[in-house]
Length: 243
View 1: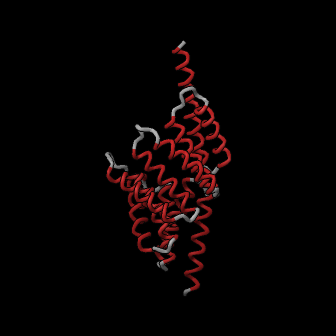
View 2: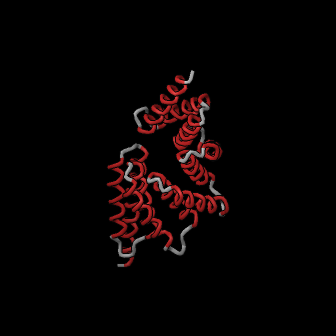
């Protein structure tokens, strides 16, 4: 009897994990509605268990927040992100790096709502954990540096933004390789910062590299590729207007 029960629970957790993985792939492909449906199904399975795995539930809330963030619904994204963080911090055995990753995700959403002061505090708290914890993960550090740098650019703190984004790009290139779309995100942010500093040649070079990566890795019609190409066009026009 107990073995059958354990197997059923194990199968349910495995199905939820598979749905979550599919949801991540849908987000990467910008299939946001399908991804959200997969996450919600996974959450329903996990929360329906007699002894639900709270860490996995926190991860699903984190991912739901991420997909709403990508869709531009920052209010819904914040609710999911805060719920995931609340669950994770309530678990005594949670890895501090998992909590820090939740902080970065929430901070990025708060940036979208222009709640910059709280977001900055969360980024710095997360970076403190990532940089000082055992087995420091360069990828996690790079994400936090990128997001904080993008925030500084939004706030007009362009020199600070450029420094952080250059560090993030170097880390991503080393850890992910030179053709990864996450690197292109940082290159786009760095290009935006250079354009605002009127360093048009540097901006154009970063845009060119970012567009090439996006188109090769995600396809020319992916929203990230489309946005980056539009940014590059605006930069070229601004440069032409000054000559």
